[in-house]
Every structure is written in structure tokens, then in C-alpha cells.
Image 1: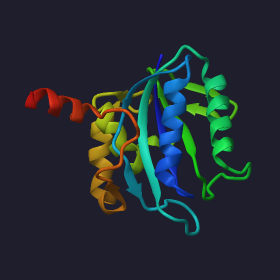
Image 2: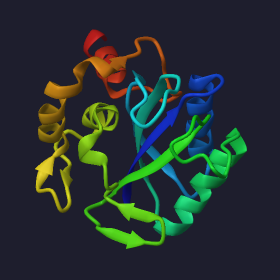
Image 3: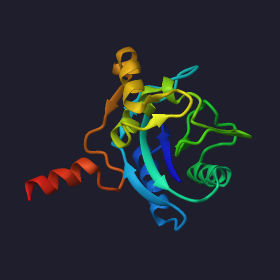
Length: 181
């Protein structure tokens, strides 16, 4: 199954937390990293005030059940220093399962597609880089169309971070090198 993850950090060395998670994915024999987006800096969205986040999206392949994956990702969040009461609070690592193939999944604390995916430009912009034509189950629209709708409202709050990489070659870098050769 192909999974799309949203990852973020707004504590400590934000980029290092994201890079460490990507490295963990690459080293995990049960996960195959397919794509990474660029890194975006995002103003905090929610109650109160917090530092800005770095956000990105990943596409990976795995046959591990979703609830087990969620538990593994939560272990990585805790290893990075996330506190148990960290919902809507500053955190060194936040990992969300956004999409899982075309599945609709509700069990326990896990809902896929992510219930607020279509409302969050900081998720839609990086997701658009790696899956613009991906249809969102239950919404009947592609990532690109949803991104265009919300971008008109929130364009100033999400900024591309040039030069920040997650450890995997971006497709545009690879395509650019092939064109130059």
C-alpha cells in the first residue's frame, strides 16, 4: 500500500528532526521511501502562540497494517522528545498518516484520509509536489484542486524553504540533472 505522510517540527533543530525521521524510514526494512517533498516553513495554525513549523510530505510503501504503522510513528515522535500531552502543543516531531492508497479507515485515534487534510495548506502544498493528481477519498477532488482552493485564502502563511533537504533526492533535482547531462 502507498502511504502519504505529513511530517512537521517546531521545537529544537526542526530540520534535523525531520531528517532523522526520513533516515529512520529509509533504514526500516518494512518501509520503502518513494518520494519526499520540499520543506516548507509554516506559521502555527491553532489556539495560542507557537513557533513556526517546518513541514514536508513523504510517500512510502508498506504492507504493515495502519494501526501498527501509527504506533511505530508515535514511537519515533516520543524518541524525538514529544510529550504525551503534545496535542496542539509545540513538538519536535509530528507525523500524520494523510492517505493510504484509496482507503477510508476509521479505528481508534486513526482516521484516514486525515480529517483536516483539505483545510491545511501546509499539508496540501508539499503533498501537491509529490502527488498532485492523487484523488482524496470522500472528497472527490485531487490534491492539486484542493490546494488551489485553499491557496487563495492562506498563501502568506506557508513558505518554501530553499536549500533545506530531507536526505532523499527531490524528483526535480533528478530531472534537472538528467536534462543537463
